[in-house]
Amino acid sequence: MQSDKSFDNYDKEFITFTIEQAGQLYIRLMGLLFALLVVPFMYVHFPSFQSYFSSFSGWTFLQDFFLFIIFILFGIALHELIHGLTWALFVKERLRAIKFGVIWKYVIPYCHCKVNLKVKHYIVGAISLAIILGILPTLWAFITGNIMFFFLGVYFIVAASGDFLIIYLLRNESSNNYVKDHETLPGCIIYKLKDQK
Image 1 (cartoon, helix red, strand yellow):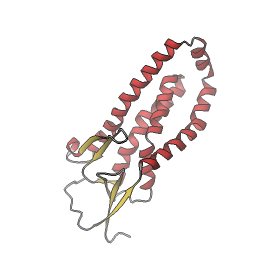
Image 2 (cartoon, one colour):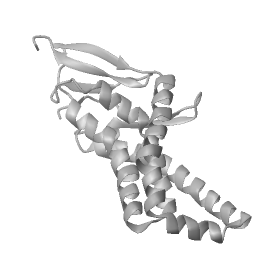
Image 3 (cartoon, one colour):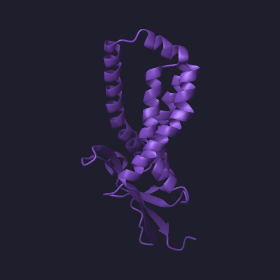
Image 4 (cartoon, one colour):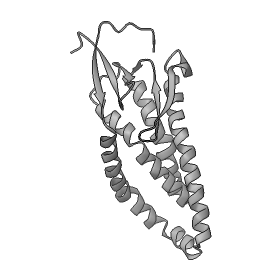
């Protein structure tokens, strides 16, 4: 991607969404994943749950809960880093084009690419988190029966709800159009050639 490319001959289209819209998708995704993943996992690995709760204690719960929170906090930081590192592969400025920050009103971390990416490259960066931190650990947990890995994987699939939403909003865009993160709102700006049909 040539980030110094002139976009004078391109029309801009704003595709944005609200935190509330992402939250609604978050809730729906939780319900869907419970039906598609949690119930089957508990059925397949019921002996693991039975073994865990047969030796259950308050101290064990506190240890596991603390460990789970540590993994979540580490994963949230890793979430944005994965987005940034992936997008950096497609721009000549590399990490200089990536901006990390926090929307303090909602205490939500974010990662923006400050230069234009092709839609297909943008989507790769957007979906990378769900694959690396969500889908792969969940699949591994299904194989091994690891309860902690399973719920971490499910959490990070749900945490990618904003990424899923923006991928959905980009579904009809040409993969070779250009896209740039909106500077102040959740979403992006699409650049289309003015003579594009």
